[in-house]
Image (cartoon, rainbow, N blue to C red; front, side, top):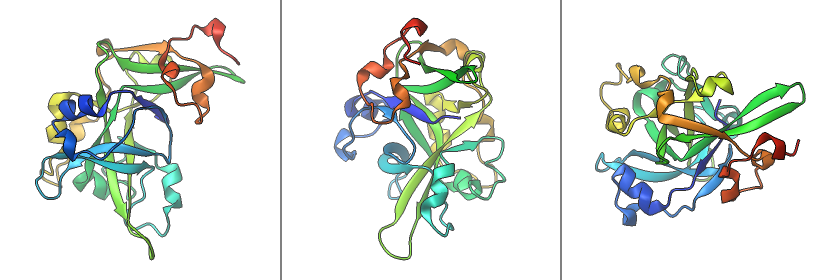
Length: 231
C-alpha cells in the first residue's frame, strides 16, 4: 500500500514539471509527511480547456454514489488489478484519472513481531514524480461538494519488494497525457498499471518519526541508519 508520501518540490518546480502556469495554481506548501484524509494537490484535466490543472483534494476516495464520506477512510489506495471492475473505482477509472505529485513515498519493513523500519523511495536523480490516481466529486445532502482521490498500487519492483509486497503505480512523464486524457471509456489505459523500473529508483532508511503524522519537516527525508532508529 501507500499510506504516506512526501512532496518537497516547490509550486514553481511542479508547475514546470506538469506544464501548468504558476498563476493558475491554488496555493499549497511542501509536505514531508502527507497522510490519509489530508488535503493534497493533484493534477487533472480542466473541465473547460482539457489542459492539466492543479486541484486540492482530500486523500481517501468517496464515490459519487456514497451515502456518507466515511468510506474515504478505507479508500486511500486502489489495487490496480481491481479498478476496472470494482464498483468503488470503476467509473473513476474510466473518466476521472489524475496524477498525484510526490518526491518520495514511505513504506515500513517488518523486522519482527514488534518492530517495523521505515524507508523512503525516490528517483535516482532526485526529480519529482507522479502516482497514478483517481478522483471523485461527492455531494452531501447539505453543504459543499467534496473532491477526493485515491492512489493506485501494484506489485512491487525488485527495490520495493525488499520492504513491502505492494508499491504505488508511478508513471513516466511521457505517460502523463495518456493517463489524463479521457480517451475511450471502454478502453482505459490498463497497461500503464505496472511496477516502475527499479533501476530508476533508490531507497533509504529514514527516522521512525515519520510514523507520527504530527511530524512534518524536511529531516524526515534524511537518511537514518538503523542504529539511530528509536524503536
